[in-house]
Amino acid sequence: MTTHPAKPVPITVAHGDGIGPEIMDATLRIIMAGGAELDVETIQIGKAVYAQGDTAGIGTEAWESLRRTKVFLKAPITTPQGGGFKSLNVTVRKAFGLFANVRPCPSYSPFVATKHPGMDVVIIRENEEDLYGGIEHRQTEDVVQCLKLITRPGTERVIRYAFEYARLYGRSKVTCFTKDNIMKMTDGLFHRVFDEVASEYPDIESEHWIVDIGAAKLADTPEAFDVIVLPNLYGDILSDVAAQIAGSVGLAGSANIGGEIAMFEAIHGSAPPLAGQNVANPSGLLLGAVQMLVHIGQGETAARVHNAWLRTIEDGVHTSDIYDPAVSTAKVGTAEFADAVIARLGELPKTLRAVSYPSGTGRIAVQVRERPPALKSLVGIDVFVDSVEPVEKIAKVLEANAGPELGLVMITNRGQKVYPGGVPETFCVDHWRCRFQGQDPERPVAYEQVISLLGRLAGAGLPFIKTEGLFTFDGQPGYSLGQGQ
Image 1 (cartoon, rainbow, N blue to C red):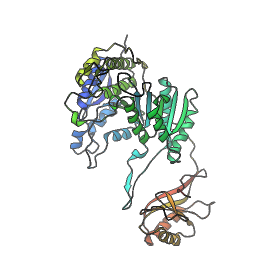
Image 2: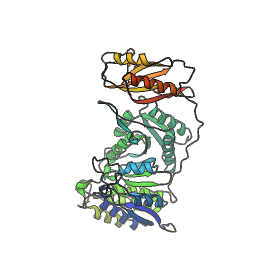
Image 3: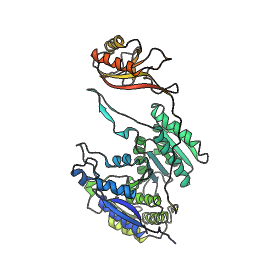
Image 4: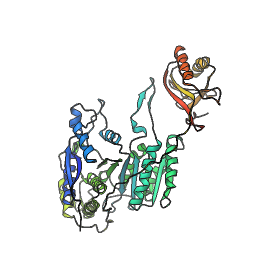
């Protein structure tokens, strides 16, 4: 017999833009019919809020609702192009620390076409950091930059979540994807923390793949993977790839998990051309809502809804995006699909594997380990210069103004060493990294010495556009070398 909590659980709901209102209506009808005990607060976000001049697409009342309920079921929204408008998803994820994006990507073969009938992958993506910090600058006529930020606490948190998720849901292996053969410090940190955390979970198999060959393996043999944890950009791309090769991006739901607040959604967009036509597939948002029900402790209801959905899919009742005359029995609209799922509540799939979820809360709490701080010492400075002059002329000015405390070690262009000892074939632009380091390796560099150097360079007609301090941590360099050094 299904049991329910003593009182309804407060959640915040946004109906979104485009197809959002239709698929949200269908989703809420299904989960409420399935027995969900919810106290729904409705907020407005997206297009209408952007139109009021709010560049984030979410107003004060919405923020207050999210702080109250701590659970957000969100339909897709439309972000205006240009004009400085921000991604609402990124804004909410970063504001509330929604550090883990969880996307189950199982196949539904033979009822939804796929080349990988045995696929059952969960992608867990770091959700706040990496290149998604939005820290970008135009520095010269030719060069713009985007900063890639990987932190140890942020990395440990999502990796530990991935292993705890594997334990809770009976998964046997966690795989890490990085590109640490090239980005040895940023992706190298992610890989190193993965190995450290994996050692605490001897009951779960762990492995690491370089992301390019790992992505190829995922596309070719997804059955080889179980849970995959990876940095933000790779995860954003490969979670969509995984959903599509499993059958359809339109079927995938997503959870965004934070320490206190969580957001649940479909992974697809608002599809404005389809709005108001009763053709959109509500499955992605519905499966996001299933994750929400597990999260708030209504696992029995989540399983009841999910199994009814599976039975609907295997009965061939399909929306047009997945309709196939070879396996489908009826092509239905958004509302009719919801009716079909509701009619099957209490039934189990016959061919597809039935699901079950924990009856208690599905929330996973993770604790980041405290570490003693390293001894940090300034040993030099990278000075980035905007110049169209040849490197030999730039180097002459730099050498003349280096001074006795800080010596010019090298100049790179787009990461490739071009002085001293560069080759004439290297293609260069107007963006030069000029590395200065202390002449005495036994003595730290003083900030006053750096400031004096920058003043001399500016006076010599080489104004800097950016600097990066060069530090050692417990004697180990905290900076990369230039290619060719």
